[in-house]
Length: 296
Image (cartoon, rainbow, N blue to C red; front, side):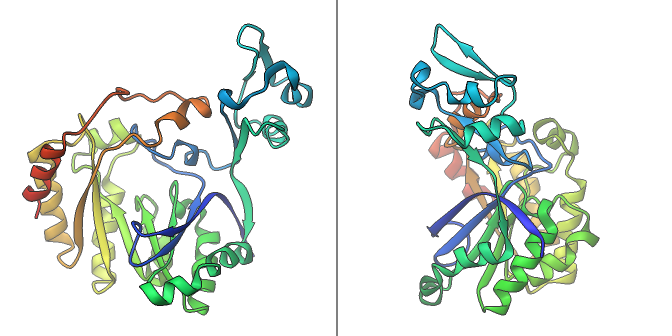
């Protein structure tokens, strides 16, 4: 059976599909959205997050001892400097941090491990109509593992859903979409150039896959979502164009806007990455409400 790389499992969620749900977050994403709230999901393998506020400094230096060629020491700040948060030696050293200043994003799980975690909440599923939601990152990047977990969940009568960019070749993921009970797919922009400038890829594959989903599974419940990002798609023309595409190509789909937030901002520095949007960027609540009214 295939294994997967998981960076988080969240229990008792009520915002990621119908009912009370368990969310399995899978590592790896082909997009690099500038506003992403899960930057730790981009790299497909394990990586270290370092929180300097928890570091006990020179009293320890365990990381320096364990990975002397990959960790240097900032004497003024009395803390380590990691050359590469994704290097295997740094990951090993981080896993031994006694102060928990270093944590590891990305653990290997078997199909049985994943399903066992899901089954912990099984009593809530039957009462609420919930189940498991696969998120990320982009869960389709771990297609073999995802496919196997979905099939095992179906065998155990557990409702399955996905949060996805749909950025994957259709022939590789058609079976996955066929087996899932509920789909949540992002449609971030209509213009391919703007989409590529802000996410790293153009949107042709996403739009084509949305059409495929409706053509082959017209009765499958699907929710198309657009995160409204200041400077990227927060204008009436863009949002109206996306809404028109959804209503035309997926007439049975639900459509919703997601308000921009900065919940994952601090995680960027923890994993050695820069947050490239303005740190104090906001989306006015009244403006967002007007956009919601526009696309109804």
